[in-house]
Length: 463
Image 1: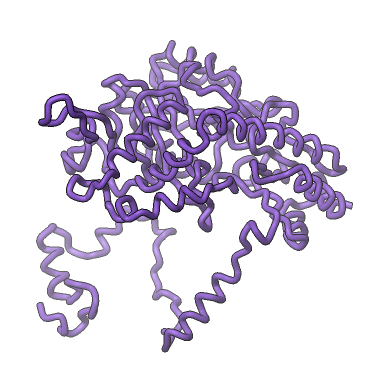
Image 2: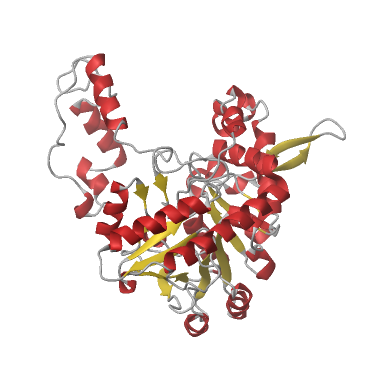
């Protein structure tokens, strides 16, 4: 087909009508629209895109892009208490220095012909993460923590052969949607309620809802309102009595302060490594981790790549290599247990740099500081008239829910922004029954003076 044929796009191959018709015939489809049948009608655009006229010069393009970028307000120009999955933690300069090295930045997927040390770097990351979470096996990071949670549940479904999962209500709404969409058609997903008085997953509800059809129960610590789950051992015991698995979403940086859920019987741990030196990047650089014990039943359900050591052809020499590669779609194609796409391996290397820099003592110091600062913020804000803290007496780490009485949360946050403060993230989608609740996040980047400034601003706004 000639590239200058009528109706052919100058830059898109096979875009001429005859070429499209031949491809549809080859796959046995009558119309292109049939390929999109699985996409809900509400998500499909049935009208031309509303695209502005083309820019005529590089000067105009630069002016346009600069105007868009100027709308961003970085944390260096405002006081931010935003969290809910993307956090303002310190990023050591060496993290960016190392992950931008050519042998890491350009070694796509880490294949042997372009390795140059990338496989060892990934192995070191997985080893450091395994030590941190107190598990044996950690994957090369997948897209993000949302995907890691959903994939962990799919692992449990395959391992148990069951079709029902219980998921804590104390989860961000967007993450829950990811889980629901990824399990749609293969499992029934039910919510375990939150105990409003303690801020933790309701243990009595877990006991009542578990049955012999349950593949797994999923909880998080700290959970969506920052509360640390303290009954993990009891939940694990209940799950195991029914032949189900306990999957625990965990913030890896919090493990400098709290014990790993692996100690209390969790079978699979998962989460996001954004806090481990990745930075915010207009919404976060993210990478999802999954961790289990070194048991074959678990290892062969990982869809993503695993790295380990193996003997080479040289006697006594070890090399860094894929583990159980044959289970992946890279080896099995459509017969793989799940599809393995582009991983977030570069962010794994970055997190490995961060972990090696801090070490156990550094992680403990950050964990303790964030815990103490969180408690200071809770006590400081709950003293403000018109402010209530959800489950204020529970153990929190980094985040907590603040309820405003008599005022709309959106209006209050807008007033705070006018004072140069990003006050938090509304939780009305997650917990509408809790009222005007905002999630406030503090990290090692915040000082007591920052929290005092927020409290004083709230006093003025709520006056």
